[in-house]
Amino acid sequence: MNMKTLLILPFLALILGSVALAEEPTDYRFPRQCTKTPAGYPVPLCGMPLTKTPVVIKMEGAALKKYPEHFIPEQENLAANEMRITAVGSGNPPVRRGQAATSWLVELGNGDKFIFDAGGGTVPALWSLRIPLGLLDKLFVTHLHLDHVGGIFNLWDSMGWARNTPLHIWGSSGSTPELGVAAFADHVQKAAYWHTRSKTGIIPSGGMKLTAHEFDAAQFSPANPRAVVYDENGVKIYAFPIDHLLVGAVGYRLEWEGLSMAFTGDSVPTRQEAIQSRGVDVFIHELFIDAETLSKKNNMPLQIAENVVNEHTPADMLGRVFSIAKPKLGVGTHFFINDYTIDEAFAGMASTYSGPVVIAQDLMVINVTPEQIVTRMARTDLLSWATPAPRSAGGKRPKLDPAPTQGRTPSWVVDTRILDKK
Figure 1: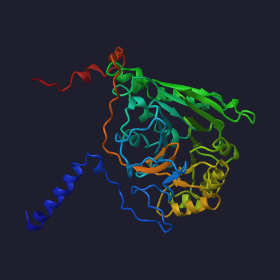
Figure 2 (figure 1 turned 120 degrees about the vertical axis):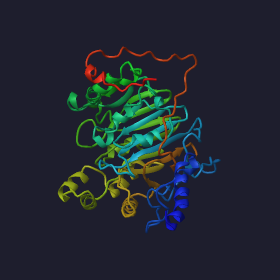
Figure 3 (figure 1 turned 60 degrees about the vertical axis):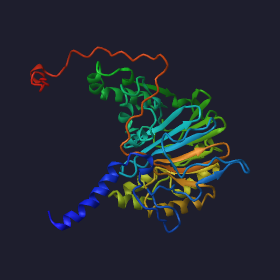
Figure 4 (figure 1 turned 135 degrees about the horizontal axis):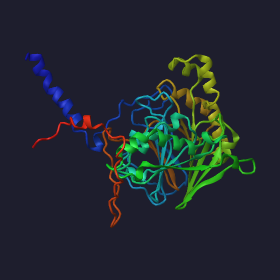
């Protein structure tokens, strides 16, 4: 071993040791150092929210709750009148390592938790929030594009060790039965049949089911532009139709204890969605990149990129939607966040809207109280384990169903198992 190697080894040990021991929340690192864009916004993925208004005061003169700089899972309890909204995934169909597809988590001070969409790549971030997986059983789907539902298998696959009841999915019917959320859930279960059958008798089967709560798209009309699709525990969730290609695309508005949020998935901007989201604390709406950038960065013909962009919402049009809706905080999501894209997006929104806005990035956290709205970033463990759900008093362990006897691995293969001979 030469002298150069001997000098390098201590430094490698120091670096590798610091990585191996990064198990405390204060050790979690953001991937970039924080600098500013030419317009003065933090660069993405540096641990700062993409906004110049991280605090929005709703009630002047009121005593304001103080929050840590970053949200760290399991270290902050929600107040009885507080809502927390987390961007689980803020991106697009081309899932990027630093930006998953679309998903949002809403947690309420009464203990309720709701997932809105579950696109590809989103579930690992959801798991890292250290919420017992058994409590994450309510999924509301805006539409059935894969960048909004492609993570369904990972979300569902928390059975046995974490959730022994069905995963419940709310969504609209389509123009024909096979285009609705009930058919989608049925097909997912059929596609996973080898998976669920193979685990029968090994783990409890209560979590191997999907339960669809499909509401009728035909009920919406100018006289009935929205409908209550969930009403439990003081929480009301309304659905309303949006303009996104096919019947069955909807937005949602959640109301609870005087707090509110709206999420509209993807859409060509309409007055309908703006009016149904009017006055909410937080309005989460897609913000789409321009066709030229989409074409160049995704190696896509310009005509195809223009076709895609025409079914979405550019920055200036999002500003017009916010101007009608007048939310306390407007959130642009479904956007390709890069140092060179966000300034133009903020400028576009500012050309038609003067209220507070933020562009979402994965694991952005928004706390909403009667007095204020605070936007931060979460710091989570990249290798977080599943969080156990609390056992109910006197609760019994679920019984296992009989294992299948047909279709088992052939005996001539089983007979060659390498067994422990101790």
